[in-house]
Amino acid sequence: MTSRKKYSGVVVPMVSPFTNSNKVDTRAVAKITEHLVAAKTSPFVLGTTGEAASIPLDQKVKLVSEMVSVTNKKELTYAGIDSTCFQISVEMARQFADLGVDAVVAHLPEYYPLTPNHMLQYFEKLADASPVPLIVYNIPGTTGMSIPLDVLETLSKHPNISGLKDSERDPARLDKCITLWKDNSDFSFLIGWAAQSTYALLNGADGIVPSTGNIVPGMYRDLYNAAIKGEREQAETLQKATNDISLVYQKDRILSQSLAALKVCMHSLGLCEKVVLPPILALSLLEAQQIEIALKELMN
Image (cartoon, rainbow, N blue to C red; front, side, top):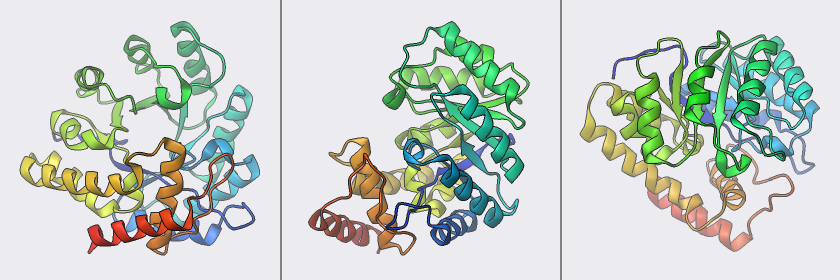
């Protein structure tokens, strides 16, 4: 796969670091951003991994501002604008665009069940109102709804919708997404199912969005480089290594628990505190110690 669409490569759904007073830790934001940019990966703030649903708007602005100032156009930047209130999403798109993000990302608003027509019109209106390109985000695990592929194909033709991040764990859907958009120069397909990164890239996906990229961004950059060069064996070796690291904080944990565990991993690397925002709970001291030991063994 040789595509080099604008929205491609390794996009890391960045952890949001907090102080003990539950405010955005700007020093840690800078440290994590530098960690990602040094590995030639693109930060995506205020996504699921970034606990976006729990952060007040003023703190979101603070986080985006710090991230963009550190990135300083060295890599593309993405920011989530999810809200159950359409106007708040539009306001975030405008504020984040003013701060300098390259693209905004939005999934379906939770709470109300939506028909395919609801979904189509929602994203069309959001893209019309956004001053920067919109990346549509499909994540049934949190929204409770899957965006149909025919809706996404229609959205792919919108002049201000530039791609899809799909985190639905469905092999048949993955293959259909690749087939639909691998040859579309104006629409990127980014996979949010990290364990399938190598498979997706070798078959024509444009990029990967791995949460474990917070821990080992350089390893995912190497995986991406190997895959787009067709170096299957090297890419698959790196896939296994990154999968093993992911298991340290994901195995036998639901999403809210794994996010707290990921913060422990980041803390063990000296990148941020272990603080998570309600309703997520911090891990026990014993569990945190077990994670730190397991990660250290894999990283050495």
